[in-house]
Amino acid sequence: MERHVQASELRDLVEKVAAGERLTREDGYRIARSKDLLTIGYMADLARRQRVGDKVYFINNYHINHTNICYAGCKFCAFAKPRKDPEAYTMAIEEIEREAEKARALGATEIHVVGGLNPYLPYQYYRDVIRAIRRVHPTACIQAYDAVEIEFIARVARKSIQEVLEDLREDGLTALPGGGGEIFAERVHQALYPGKIGKEKYLEVHRIAHRMGIRSNCSILYGHIETPEERVDHMLALRELQDETGGFLAFISFPYHPENTPLTREMLAAGQVPHPTTGMDDLRHHALARLLLDNIPHIRIFWMAVGMKMAQTALYWGVNDLDGTVRRERIIHDAGATTAQEADKEEMVYLIRQAGRIPVERDTLYNELRVYDPAAV
Image (cartoon, rainbow, N blue to C red; front, side, top):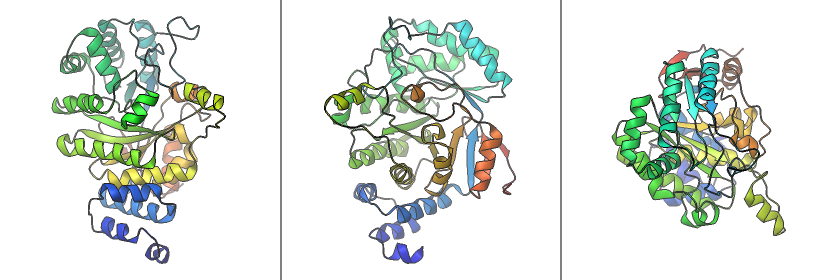
């Protein structure tokens, strides 16, 4: 391996990573375009060891997608439905309570709530969702409503973002999920999701939350029409905000799933064949995140989007979090994901041990609930 690294076009970057130096935008562009997957993995694994050690985290969590009615019209989304679509739904508060009870019975320590931008819901509904979960499962961390949803809720309710966050925190909100940022490049914003907020407003919501002491995650949607350079620019915008606030817990990458989406229909009509991301791209992308996001401790892979085997392999390309048990996820499965819709803790522990790492069950805020014996089974 050392011989390969010494002969690599990226060997100067290996030296920077080994010395703990921050990588630049141009460094990121080089990595994003490089085919030298082994050296990229070597650098990312080195950075991972330097920053977070050998612990790999997972969480016992439960997803609730409260509504799929959405007006935003994002071309990469297969989940959203108009109000009169026969598959459209909005969960009643009683249904939310039943789902929260299922989560409690399963021992979930986090309930994750995200949904569509539904203009027909009153402000009180969003508060009642949080209150219902808190009432049924008092000890759960509630991670609810991404930045896009928070901005939308504030606009519909004619309140400030801070006022909305204050209300939700009073109701029991623990943290914000990281979704909705997609790709910050304005070119992509206008082409794929002009009906919802872009870079500046996404960052503003997280900045306000962090200043209030509300932690959050951040994310990227990759593998559609963006360029490698636009991925780098996206990550560096998040790095800049993290330098300012320190409020991000983890960075999550969502690979684009092309089935059943408006973008795919447009491409097929134009004679183009859409492709999902490849294994090489997934590994290089997560490694790039570890290398550039030197101030965000946890690089999380959403195993449900890439499969468990790829997620385990990515532990050697900078990743240190396998997400969680999840259960009942709808958004990426509506877009064609064929992976399981849940996992159990035993499977998570087994995969982490087989990778030679230390399994750690965490909560939303990365408090360690159980550190497992690292011995492989």
